[in-house]
Length: 95
Image (cartoon, rainbow, N blue to C red):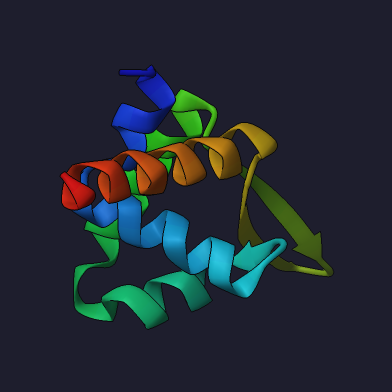
């Protein structure tokens, strides 16, 4: 299995990727955390970092005056890995 597809397959990482795919484009990390699980923000950040290390997402800091935000988006490789994961799952379900 492709390492990117494997990275996407973990449940929290899959939810992160699916959410980013659904909302398209760059998202504020705080909004992603709020949508997924605000009580476990450390877990979302940890998995987002793992996805970034694997090249599935791109994370960057943006400065607006004195305010710093963390932004996250799926990479082209991440979108392809998510599609491949979905296709492989559909194959398994179809038998």
